[in-house]
View 1 (cartoon, rainbow, N blue to C red):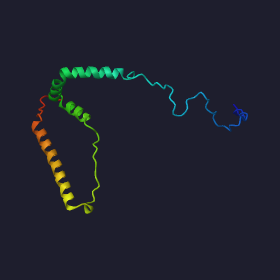
View 2 (view 1 turned 90 degrees about the horizontal axis):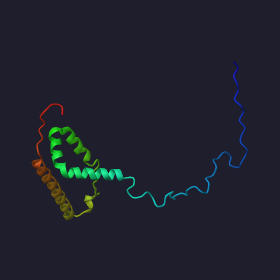
View 3 (view 1 turned 45 degrees about the horizontal axis):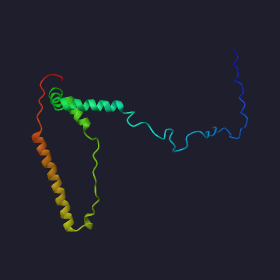
View 4 (view 1 turned 60 degrees about the vertical axis):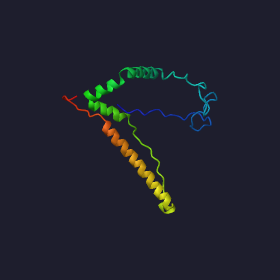
Length: 143
């Protein structure tokens, strides 16, 4: 069977746009203009989430601490996983660029003393937390 050539496509009539898309009609939204100036009604999108959080809060008031204890005792892996997921992923710190050669001896001693006090306070908190922390013993297989 012989091959058939596709029909030759003729260019459209010249409308002055030279192949560019048609300009947007005047009734379209202007840049920075909202289609709904009043916006979405407050809370309309989050009704389910709000109701869920209300239910979770109510349940937490009733069973919160007891549920934590049971979970920690019976499912320590899941308990630690949930606790770790609640920790912030990033910690922000302010770092000051101190030019030691530009400060006086008194200012340097004050900065070192302040740093030592902060380090000691953090250490004291960590020791107190370690002393107060309950020891979890896992008894059982594959929980």
